[in-house]
Image 1 (tube, rainbow, N blue to C red):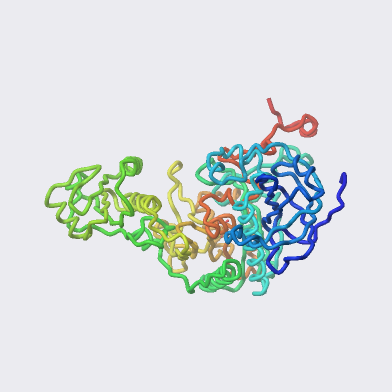
Image 2 (image 1 turned 120 degrees about the horizontal axis):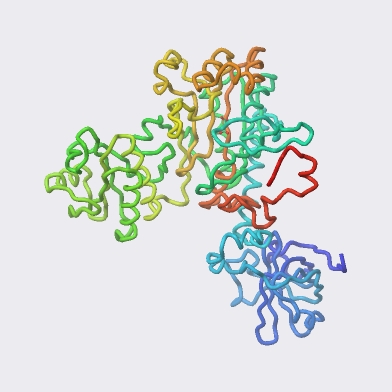
Length: 580
Ligand code: ASP
């Protein structure tokens, strides 16, 4: 430190009317400087908030103050005064007072800022690359700072809750063997074991199961997970799960403790009382009503089969179905919305159109009879719009589900202040991988199938349901888990159904299979996507806004320049890792 005499006695954001007359020392960053006549007004900011400082020509700091600019770090000694009534700012927690500066010390200077962090409107036009390149400045913004603090509060409240329920926090390795969650592994070459790699854990799944075999009964962990997936909307190569596992539990037990934890966290952090139990839909019901397994139920617009319109009316084959829904239009039906809908229908491969209350159709045609049938069946009122589509049941439902989500967003149909939780359960165990045509588990291969479906495992696998459950909040999946297989024979049966030979099973999961033979208790658990949970609580669309140092959409970090080339010396130590 070069020189620093004036050490702070109070946080900027803490000043209140009660402090009037007191002498205080504030330390912080110059948020803004305004010069009005001979007076200089500074908004001084620290983590606690912002306070106004006034420097008059009488102050011994007056000369020094001329040189300061935005984001200088300064110390101010002065007396708290009540602001004249006209200058009271009710928007600011410290808006009734100001500090009249007697002495000022400059603790550090700042170069002119590369980001307009003092102006949220200007920030909207700033590229994300630039924001992330200067993330240490971006994080100074009120909104982002609050998000990061909210995240800390949520994590803390989760820890508090689970500890109070008898869970213990245990760390599991990040450098491990593959723990498959359906993504590619990030591999780390081993210097000491030539030609071998660690896999960064995709989740603590197998370790937490081993902890149950070990007898810990209730575990939790704030775990970083690494998944090398292709860039897609709002994915991060590393993200954080609040992961937990319990022994001697049924599906109901896990769901119950999760509901209780959400109730605790929302009360503690946002002072919101959630109603429990949360509503539940089976996977089939969710697809039928909303066309998705993560519906936003803050608004209605439920899908239904349109019995009186035939697929032929929409120029579709007669064995297709016609389904539809209606929404309240918040404003006019704009051309760009229609264009987007047309693209959505085309990309999902279904025949779709929209229809207003007068029977006018857009994006497609319908005969007079069919129009009458639709307007009657959907009862489209004057401020409403009907959407219908024809195609195979699942395709149509999913396409309409996407359209419903899109229109909900465009027309602001969901109340942003509402938090609507929903459980989805009774998932099909398997799905068919489009590329390979192979069966893959929807959750993971360690999930317990519904006991009554076990006989269908080999004969009719697509009919088997899983003892898994997803927790959905405002249209986002914020947690997913299951009851696990705790029997070696069943686990082997499952892995062989997924195409693994005996040798492959032993090679990859031998340690788990073995552990299952030494008194593995029945167990189950769940993992919350902490980033998404906090993003929804903060009202942010992107999880990048609640992560201190996220990667950009290309999975790179413009701040530190990662990923980067490996240094020569490193490569020399791993000669088998040849890089051209
Ligand atoms: N391991 C799962 C996941 O990462 C969560 C769980 O089943 O508990 O999605």
